[in-house]
Image 1 (cartoon, rainbow, N blue to C red):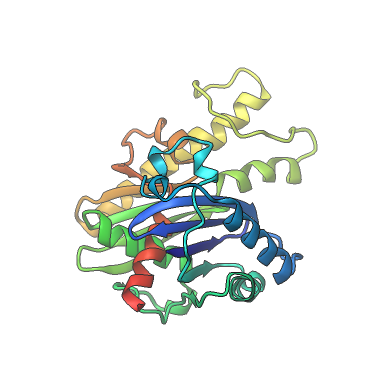
Image 2: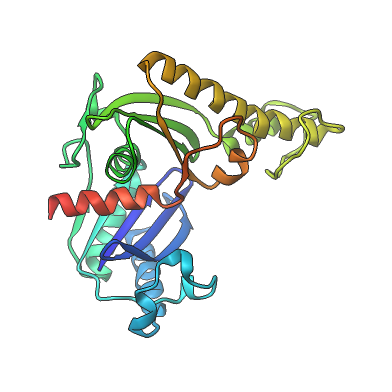
Length: 275
């Protein structure tokens, strides 16, 4: 069994793979003030709590009930792999896993064998989550491809048909954009992100939601079109992250694939390449 962890600026996603099947997933907040012991105790507890019969373990996560998704078995973990874009948490999480779960940890970087070529000016600048996404896209889907990852920022990762990460785009994320309203204005309210049906809002909140949700969708439509024009060919579009389905409903060209666990899949593939 393999433990995978995607450490982002806002959230940490932890999963467990049984072979190629993702059987557990948990989410927690990224907190730089927590110690390795606090993270270690949390990990040990969730692994200990996840304890059902081994027959349930073989079912993919998507086919389990919402309750069983949090109480599937804590399998016999052999190794762990981490992707982190938060440097203060990288070493803490590694120590936490080694100390409390007692398994070896692979922390991926631009130097880790990943099956793709980082065809950019400075590979060191490429986030580990983007490396994992690109690796997963190249191995699981038809390329050339664009991965749109809805996180703290919204990232566009461009993968060529010969397995190169050709670069991409980083834009402010949906949550970041919504928080900017109340941070930089005096009269606009704090906004709860939810879907909207009309482009033209009838009140202040609807105006703001339209600007963020439908505006984000229009940006994605436009940027994908421009990327295709620059590449001179059509691409497969893949989305991951919490707002994928909401944004997809407003796109003129819906995503070809929505995979909420794409980054975790990439970590699994990178681990296999390095094992």
